[in-house]
Amino acid sequence: MHLERLAVAHLDAVAGLEEAGQAHPWRRATLARALADDTLEVWGAWRDATLLGHAVLAWLPFEAELQAITVAPHARRQGVAGMLLAHLVTSARQGGAERLLLEVRESNAPALALYRQYGFDEDGRRRDYYPPVETRGGKREAAVLMSMSLKARAGD
Image 1 (tube, helix red, strand yellow):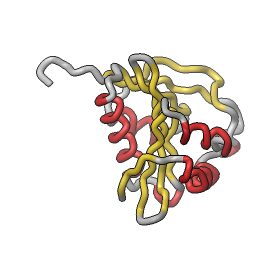
Image 2: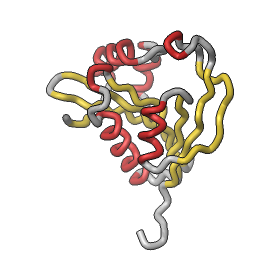
Image 3: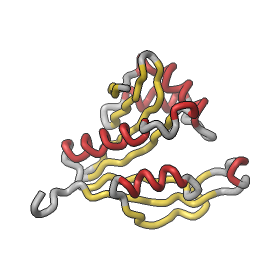
Image 4: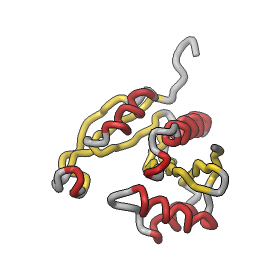
């Protein structure tokens, strides 16, 4: 598996992954803008010519935000999300961000466990933030707001 920064030329692969891997996929036009936007980094995890996952990092003043990680259903629980997350944490730190922010659906236990494993802490919740997903009870869900400090600690 290898990582590659994605560009507009990868739009078909990213859109296909979104459709296969998300209950509420990003629209093709949104993906195209993200792939062309200099304030975003979109990274893909590939095995041979197959896109297994992608992640979107947005640059903000003093911070970075993980906007999405999507992994193909057949590639889940194989370390794809962890590989993408580790790369984005390093990128955000090297880019000078003080914190890395994210939000995640409260029922997404695998993602919550991954983020906690990487050192993210819960900062709060947004009630009724995510639209309903039938496989999750068909009602709106809270977003768990999380962040990770990227500042060097004494002794590092």
